[in-house]
Image (cartoon, rainbow, N blue to C red; front, side, top):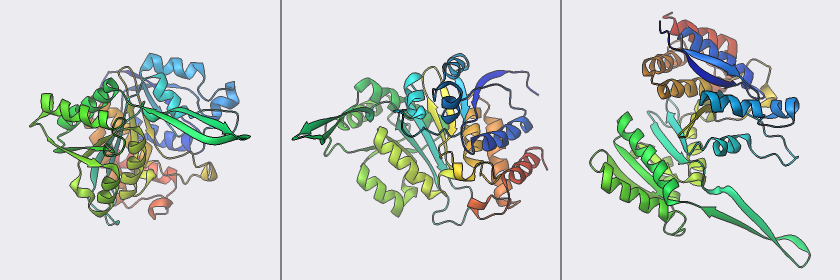
Length: 344
């Protein structure tokens, strides 16, 4: 047993968040993962407690631990609140969004999928420079948005993707762009990626490029032709959900937001308030996010044990929640998973 202690911020979140976080903590405890948790609130809970979806204490905690695991957050409607997820990315400069998609339950429409989408997290159209131009008494007559991609931001993200590809043995990286139309905005990303590959990574993996619309079609026709996709913010947002659909939906999709000084791991699905408190939520996405977190803190053997236990619980024990066609509640699934981790 390790004596290592790794401080980490825990944000249970809203809706089903606390239920899936509890399940994930039970699994991490069974693995004897050495996290020392500082529990904080955010989202709707933050608004109710302190009038802010991202209370200062939560930000201070992440700044101190530089590591967080979070359940889904609900952005309150009205009141001008911005997405807490976008604010967290900006606050901690979490420039890389890592979204792996791997088939865990075989027999779906697509089998043996093992893909990674690496998305730029801070630039592009997502920065929200938008305004309206009033004409003839219509205050919203014209809508305008400005997208900004920088050479430095593109290189930082592409370097992260290329380094990750080398470290994890990915054979091919595909840069996804729309440089045929958005020649400047996505052209800078494509050009930076091709240049970086030539100067530093040539021969370490195969590099390919594809236009976003063709990529979406190819992912549906033959996803196995791809290995790692790297792209700008908006395209990455769309494609990461698309590849999640290939493996069963957002309930199977973990996410990691990586920056120079902090990393936040999450289930990318919503807070599902309609099923909150019913004990039927599927914790798989957050469990897989915890595995990514274990990889990040250089505990790959614990990450592998967790992934293997998830696979065996779902496929050997056939203990599955309702969204996966099973009858197990969150507690029964967690109990079966912990038993697997303990060698049961």
